[in-house]
Image (cartoon, rainbow over all chains, first blue to last red; front, side):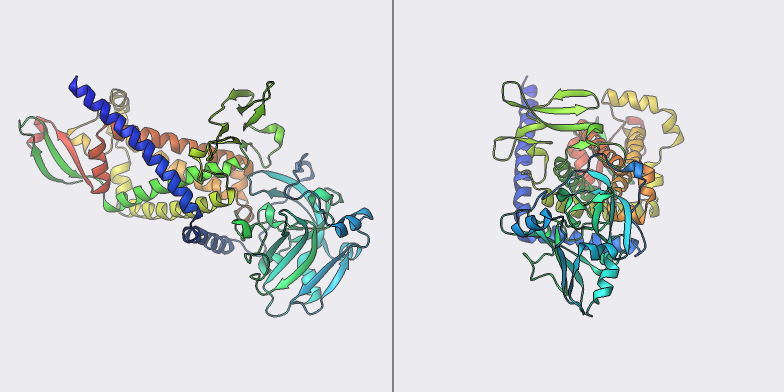
Length: 257
Length: 287
């Protein structure tokens, strides 16, 4: 009887101890999640991931391209699905006929491109899989102007290192969406400024009139509603300085996984 | 696993012998691995909660989900948590689909806050934890594999002997009766232990890593065959989830066996290396 009582109290001690330990562990993990120095340590894995993925990726390795029959019946428009900016609304009402893409920054010949001018540039059509950071995937067909030849035509200055895409949409009240990629991705053959999706003009929920396709990274890198491309040597002065709307909010700048 | 010393109880009846059971490299990699797996499971469930559904194939067509967790509004205006597996639907209010969040209020979420890292909804931070500890798991696993093969640990301690395989039925019966081998047989791993460790080390863990890598659009471009092996990105995601489930089941049985076969002795063996084995009178002569 005494023996039984002792084991019971020991068992309840262990169970209570485990529950308290578990609660302390979870609370401790939440605290660690918010500690800047601990976050800095966790974030170092991103550099390792980028280094390792760039080691195994050659400039020519293409994201898989699929058949017409693989195109998803439903492709979720994620993030912004419309734009409140009055200038954008005016441009959209006449089919973006007067709309212009501006290219500035560390380029020899800054300039503007109309949608018709972009359509006359070397284009690429690709049926690719879009992988959202949330976990879902959808296949779509994209047609657009290759970014590499555009950058060559405007001429990059020697200290150009990143291509920044400034967008018309706001996901939060104050900040416009923006995204940036380095020159490795900018000159990849599948990196295009898409103006068509599934054989029709790019719909507004998917980023009309122009969105980025950077096929070897996650969906949030594929900036929609592009208005202005800026070539920079560093993105530290843009937004909160981490290179993209979502990087400023804790996500990886290099979104290869 | 050499014996160091033998000791006798005061009454001299139950003799025990201390053996050096786990080498230092195995002890270190075991605990690093345990920490990594715990963080990877909890942060993985945070990531899963961003899209609490699973599919087979390349894409996530909404009507072809094999698993879906969410909340539904009832006729009376209240909500319930619903888990759909294939064509079966279960009410899982309180645990899956609808549960109390960190603030104590009911919220729609796949897995409950006490199973996710962080406890509140934060995909970005969950991913930071997950990839840091994924690197930890892979680098630690590589250290272990190099050691296990180079030192002979895999061949000597993990590969079952022909004799063990012949008596697998008896080992199964002993486990079900929670009777564990003593004497010479108690020094090393028994056959069920060996087979389950081999399945985890050379099966589940590499499969979890490879299916995780297949979810990367960059690595799919570098190694397109990954998509063919696993049948598409969403299949890889589903298999990754099943691996996590399998590893969790393994850990539960593993910890239960540790508790049943002497928690302090097992813990000491995995911390200091020293493991005490009860010896029979016949085996006594040897020490």
